[in-house]
Length: 166
Image 1 (cartoon, rainbow, N blue to C red):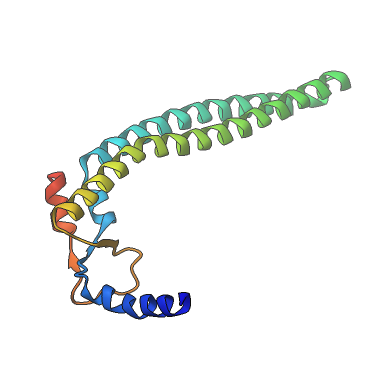
Image 2 (tube, helix red, strand yellow):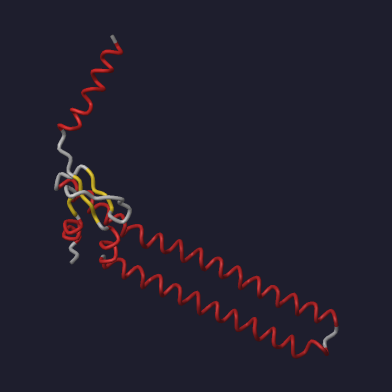
């Protein structure tokens, strides 16, 4: 009895799916994201932060160069214990520079995530709203879509309009 019910349900599944009216859409999220004015603002903020880190890195590099030149110029007349101490100072400066670069890269990546996430969320919300308002069953991103048939509707203009983009 259970097998018969299962077979009937299994046979009815394709008919149920065929009876539904699916509406598929595509959207070019990269195009939309690049047109959003918030992206340009976020990029400017990231660029300003990157310039600050670069300026600090240049200062640290100049400090290293000065210490190293001073050491090279005077090393032949230095007692061995002072020479060792100066070499250790130079190595410490190199380590500080390396640590600073790692922290700067990490911070820039973190800031990029913080600045871009709200923009991506805004775009995602607009895509969902367009999907609901226009009765789409699915909206796929053309940037990861392998195939789009003739029945798929490009929802990119609708999302752009929703966000007020041209």
